[in-house]
Amino acid sequence: MNDARVLVVDDSAAMRALFSDVLEQQRNVTVIGTAANADEAREQIALLKPNVVTLDVEMPGMSGIDFLAELMQTNPMPVVMLSSLTQAGTETSLKAYELGAVECFPKPLKATPEQFAKTVGKLGKIVLAAANSNVKNNKPSAAAKAELKAAQEVQFTWNGHFLAISASMGGIDALTHMLAAFPENCPPTVIVLQSEPALVATFIHHITSALKCKVVVAQDGAALTAGTIHIAADPEKHVVFEPGSPPKLRMVLRDPVDGARPSATLLFGTMARAGVPAVGALLTGMGADGAKGLKMLRDAGGKTYVEDPSTATVGETPAAAVAAGGAEKVLPLDQLGAAILSSCNQS
Picture (cartoon, rainbow, N blue to C red):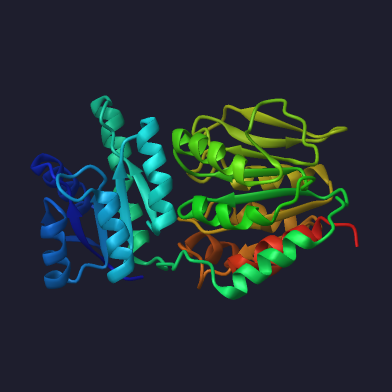
């Protein structure tokens, strides 16, 4: 794993000092410089050669989002955007993912000291993961476009398999690309997405208009039927699979499982215990949530897929799943959607 050499870009001297102090407390992370605006950032990047940048959205002169667009065109590198969780902030975060940001981190502008410390404490781990991420060219290749077109043209008839997907860091971008292939009558799908609920709500609003199938926030008691994707992101509740005709989702209050809530391992595990025909997929992410659960699902006879760690935005979670023996097939993102749908399609 590479150490993180970070440039902190923020127009506020107080925030630069705060984030620098927080990052310096993370092992294997060094703040090599700071900048107050885009002009200073360009100079510091050329001089210091950071391998990750934290970038504030709101800056005088050129905005953070405009500088991100410039950076991805001229000098692509891992960028963690710092944004608010207002409606405008979540819209900007989605734009940042589209431009190539590895992660969007919420600035805790209105929080108690305890909440602030808890939220900001995550930043060091995120920056370290970003320094070891794969910076992607978000313009789809000809091959990826061909794969998507072919998947969209396949006649789909659901074969009774239920689908569970997990993603965390880099997940919004990965899901945007993968779900584009899903048909109107897609398999009943549950997604555990480790991201801020406000950002996920905006993501759902945007992606719904682009997809043929329905996408909703996971709710307790929701029936799992063809044509609907349920996304669980509430950090206070786990999502589990309850057998029945049709099966339902249950949102449960429990302690985190291996540090994660909602836990993909818990979702995969409850599907495995239910003994239903199931397909599991684990995408880009930080940490190891879902790796053990995917192995349980595979051992129970489910079909399991993992995004190729070498091409995932963040390969930590996919690599953990491969190491745990949970991966029946390891595929790059542009092949995953078609492969998953094939497993859920009547042949």
